[in-house]
Amino acid sequence: MEIFIYILCALIGIALGVAAGFYIAKALAKKAEKDSGNQAKKILEDANEQAIALKNKAIQEGKEEINNLKIEAEKDIKDRKSVVVELENKLDLREDTLDRRSTNLDRREELLNEKESKIDEKKSEVENLNIKVQEVMKEQEQKLVQISGLKPEEAREIILKRVRENMSNEIATYIKDEETKAQNEAKSKARNILSLAIQKYAGETISETTATTVSLPQDDTKGRIIGREGRNIRTIESLTGVDLIVDDTPDAVVISSFDPIRREIAKKALEILVSDGRIHPARIEEVVERCRTEVEMDIREKGEEAVFKAQIGKIHPDLVKLLGRLYYRTSYGQNVLQHSLEASFLAGKMAAELGENEALARRAGLLHDIGKAVDHEIEGSHVEIGVELAKKYHEPKEVIDAIASHHEDVAPKSVIAVLVAAADALSSARPGARSDSLENYIKRLEDLEDIANSVKGVSSSYAIQAGREIRVMVNPDMVDDLSTFKIAREIKEQIEAKLQFPGTIKVTVIRETRASDVAK
Image (cartoon, rainbow, N blue to C red; front, side, top):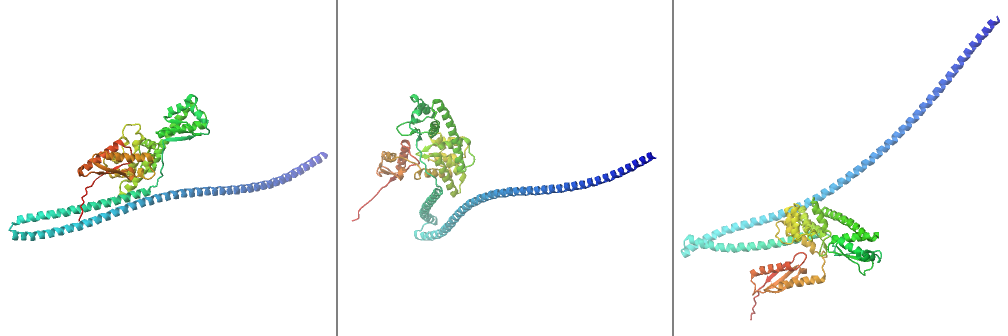
């Protein structure tokens, strides 16, 4: 019985334990479910916050991207606008050029129309005169037949002869008047074109010398330049081909040479040696070689710059280098490259006014003195050398003609050649372009007059126009009209053979016969 009670108690205890465990498990399950819900809610809230943050970040990045795209688009639009403005400016310039050419063509057309109308008027006048002549001839023929008893054929021949004589005189007078008028108009138009070209060009005047001064930081540097027993100065002079003058001039030495390229190399080398302080033969050789390379590069850059300024298009690289060498050449103190650019510009302006090829005129003007780049290295005048170079590098025939005729060695064959000769004279003759000492100037004038006075038949001569023209008076009893041309030719040849002069010299021979009497 007790066992049964124990078993029953055990069963009841087990049942109570199971019931308690069930309730406890259920409570734990509810708690776990509640905790899971809270955790899920928190996770959901965190996910929402992250989504909002990502959304805001994406919106911010999108705004920045849009802003960057907007800035790039505005920059692109600005660049395109500048390109458009530049193109519009070029179009406006082109339009102005076309308008000017159109105006010139209209002016020429008006002149042609006026000339045609005048010709038509003259033609009608001639026709009227012919009609009147025929009528007069018939009347005179009838009168002659009646009075003289001549046959009609004989009378007609007499009248025709008289009419021919009268008409010949009238035609000769008319032709002479028209020729004089045409010459006056041509001179006036030429002066206008030249003055317009000069007015449009405003270039600087630069005088060149044959010596260069290099400043020294202190006077004792001269001794280091000379070196032991003069070895340093001898090395510099032998490598550069210049004369280095070290005298009593304080803190300076003078580099003397008629070759500006050698002077420039020597100047650069000496400046580097002085600033560096290491002056000995090995260092001198190294620096001179480096400076020679730099000057060669500078020569090419000067040539390319000249071609760009002249706007003549493509040109052979060797000619570009020769143009650069002209920067280091002078003619009576005038820089030859600057002179060539001036001639190019002036020739182009005059060609544009006349309706000729402006680019070709600029090209011919730039290359007209190309022979001076190597005339001290090759035998022959700079004109002959320039013609050979132009032929070698296949330049247009107008350019070759301009080079050959710009000093009137040969007759020009094109309008462009005439314009280049005029531009060459304008550039060299303008005030300050070329320098000459007063003694040389006076000596040249005296030599001109002496040459002219030495010719047989000359009574007196006068050098005028700053030595660019000489007027020669001849004895009319010793020299006839035909011989005046011979004397002018002889004086011209002697001037070319005996004198050196810039530009051209005009020789004018005057033969004057005066007859006088006194009325009483």
